[in-house]
Image (cartoon, rainbow over all chains, first blue to last red):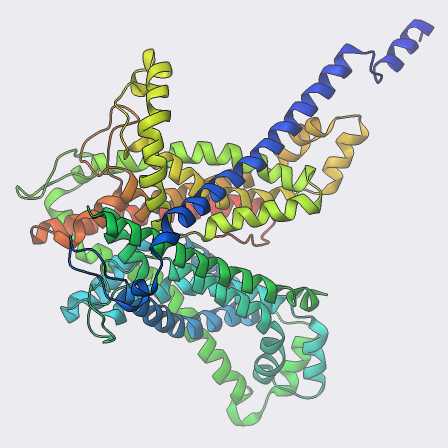
Length: 297
Length: 332
């Protein structure tokens, strides 16, 4: 190697080398692009929240919560029927879906280290990805058509089907995070498998599972597609599980597609209420997650 | 980790101790417990099977009447009983693929930013913002898409695109409206961004550190490291992430129903109204004109179900390959 070459190869990694400068410039440019992309994700959320408050806050008043929807074209009215309906169907859907979901999650965690478990895990993932409107039509064929009646019960079943894969997955993950030493201690004391799971593993995983439950609940509270052909919607207050029932997301959809100004305002107000509820529940779930960290260690 | 199928160590010890002669060698409580959990697991399997069974059997009249022509026929005339879902399938594919391209570019860049560049103090709030985007209900996106985004497109963005790009690219040359394919694409890309971002992030984080260190030791800059060692390693997983986003976009219902304009026909410009499979069901199912119309809409749902099922299967396999069977949590 001649002295000239040696000097050139040292130059290669200094600011004097044009190739090196170009590589640094590309690196900086791409870092800036990544920064910009991350910044861009904040824009839609900020815009949506801004308009929800701007258009929705003015229409939030006591009437909105205490009156039922007014007849088309007549101002006033509220969305009491939708609020009550959503509470009933989300509650019932959660009650139906939770035992199945937790059972499925426990099965995957405890008996799932084989081919059947792999297949079931895959099916759970696939079920989570199926469009919610096809779930609505499935329940329509399963319950609504045979009963010849749109029912709140059918709506709750549809919501439960949306909830099951989300919660089942989280249950399994949370149970696998429970340290083996806890199980081994239970076995050493002579506890059979079922008692170990029910008394030791599940309670330890419970904060994480509760988080999952709240996230799943927040998710189904915003679903309208599974309810369109099952609970249908109802402009009158109904608490009868075997009749059509209103729900907040459904009412937002009907009001948004309607031609009346006060409907649009109420749609914004309902959206604001719904989004604040969902974000609140998600935030609450996150604070519980804090204790998940202690489970993991 | 125990080998598949055969319990070893503590589990085997436990199983041996619990065996009792009364129940043929198994603990009764364990049997009941395993039985109950299996029932719950079976319910999930039955749900998938039931979905396909129910939709297939209910759409049988339409399948028999229209045959395979249903998939590419472009006439949808309920009173005359002519049903072809071709325009809906085209509308679905155009909006979903366009949204996917936009969401993938941004989503992968954000994922790279979170894993490779950002300090935790920045990465955490950004992750949180993206998770919040996933938590906003579809119908709220729709409302915002019509009354904020749609109006903006009609008054400002649309005329500008029409005037600049529309001058020489035919499908940009249209009359901007509040609702149409363009609005739908933008809303959809925002909605699937969380899916693409979250899965890409997990896949990129699963790339072994030695991959990065090797290239860095050779003197690569950070971007060269990402380009030559991180992205190639994560490629199939990132594709899986994108395809999972595609499945979401294909099945998205209410937001699209509100912003796409709902018209039967093949769109010619990006501002034209159209229908997707999900939006035609949402729009027409509660006011069907005859039994065949109902059956045809159920067949549209069946096509949609099969499509998203296949997309999901492909995506999961791709993601599993990169993360070595470790599961990736998806914000659905």
